[in-house]
Image (tube, rainbow, N blue to C red; front, side, top):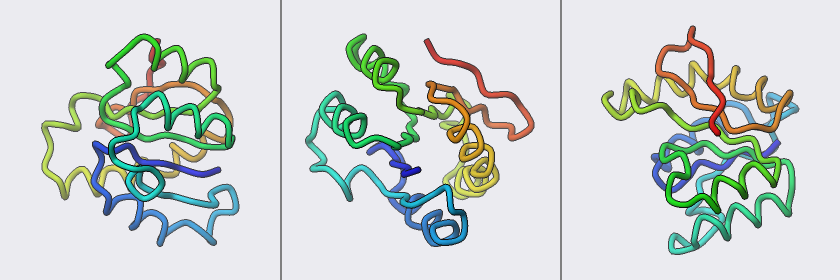
Length: 133
């Protein structure tokens, strides 16, 4: 699987996670930031469609693709696994979020390997992810 962190996520996260997992977890072949794969001005619907066409991509985001019903429909239709950080993440400091995304990482990989769905990731790592419709 290949993981892409949306533009609203710190670019340092995918770089750090890539260093920790690529080559060590056979399920994960790439972890990158949106800005490293697409021009920052690329509309969400365009890069989502590209990822869907390429296949095997998983998206990690904060915004939940709330901008349009077209984006939500595209995510569901394309069969992308999408993880959206719950609003509680926005209330935390950068370093706390950095530690928490690493805590969540094994569950994100395990979940993405089993199902292609849009899921909300709560702050607490012992909590259950909820489906996004």
